[in-house]
Image (tube, rainbow, N blue to C red; front, top):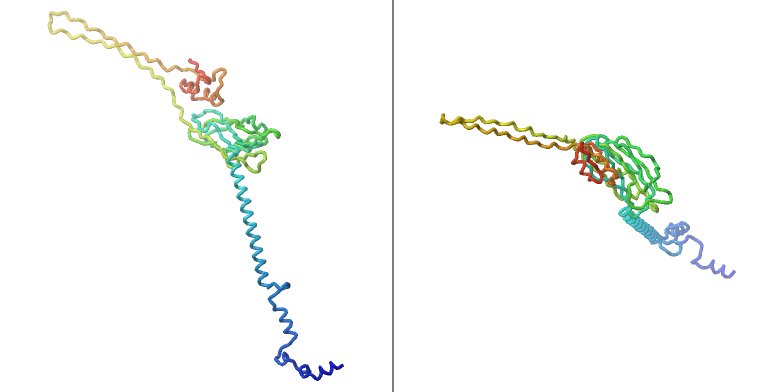
Length: 311
């Protein structure tokens, strides 16, 4: 009770308007404003500083992710580059061919697998249908399974070949043979298109490293001319009479020229020699239009392939 009286008698605690009230300030609003406007969060960390730390942490995570992605891409490209460098190669043989109209010959599709084991290949070949005609396609033994049968039309040939499931092909071999016929005097090419693909065991995507095509040059047929020299006519000289009338004129000699006989070029027929060990394209050359009656063209393929039979 004593405390109460003393407090009531103290001028400093007398009732009446406080200093804040005298200045026109609401104490309640002042406290709320002070609590709201403080620059500190719980734990004593300034608000602006904490926002900066969060931003730096976010930027660090983004940079780390970008670096990791670039490293992964570079590693993938290096692996892909090495795989392609040592990957399979498809080529057409022969790479060049000189022919005449109506010649027929074979073009081989050769696959070099490199270090890969090939399970299948999809082949797309582009050719000029106004220059050559596709007569047939024969698949080889290295990829013996015909997954998609061969078709050719309007200058495009397509076929898909595969290996047996347990025996993928590795090495170098002819996986197919195209039989063509020359129909026009012009130069043309036969080549693989970008749609050609190769599948290798243990690898994904197209493992084909490169392709090589062939060029066909067609020449005009040159006829074989046989020239026989006509015999020289006999010349008889008329004797000149002697100026001295008493002399008996000596008859002139009759000079007769012996005609020169030129042996004509021997004709015959070119055919495949019995037991010939040469390739199909050389055998086809023996019976081509340019060799069948041309001894020189026939013997160009060698006696082990072609046989010349005189008429």
